[in-house]
Length: 113
Length: 108
Image 1 (cartoon, helix red, strand yellow):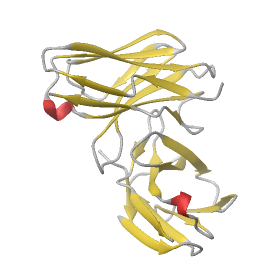
Image 2 (spheres, rainbow over the protein chains, first blue to last red; image 1 turned 60 degrees about the vertical axis):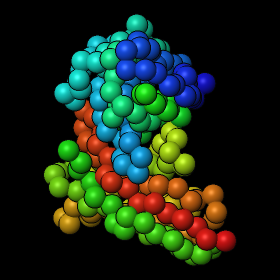
Image 3 (cartoon, each protein chain N blue to C red; image 1 turned 180 degrees about the vertical axis):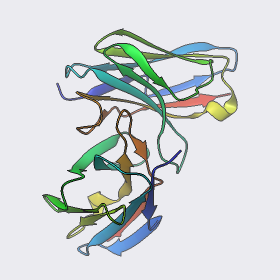
């Protein structure tokens, strides 16, 4: 299995809702990442997990809460989001940081209404 | 903050022609990567070039790196319609940061 699987592919949520994005990989990669991408912009790093521990938080608002339950799973819990949080959320993994390329999932397109 | 800046921002060429995209970065690097993104979906890793390498090939892709000028180029030879996508360079150690990207459109 050489893929990163993200679910759901599309999500519409209200500003008072709580939802979660899920990311799964079975390549044995020990680094996992969340990126946010707005239209016609590059992906922006949100969080880095290394060996299931949060190693980098790019000053992301607390309404985004990451979780790494095990080495194969990465979740992003969403609560009280704003319409400007609407974006494509991308998960990626890599075996050992940046010395090799990242494997990206196809993303979750989130719309906050 | 973004490390890389791609040039041009957008490029349209005829199918069969070669496409060249450039990336400039600001600080010293250990490696530089190029990614492709189709239609706003997931990114695909194309190639990684290390700081001690000057050129690398993968199929129709050729990447060069000039650390003295802090720049890299991606050449796609004999372009195809399927090459229509956005291309990003990326640099970093504990994390990779993407440049603004080049939107490539291959005309039939």
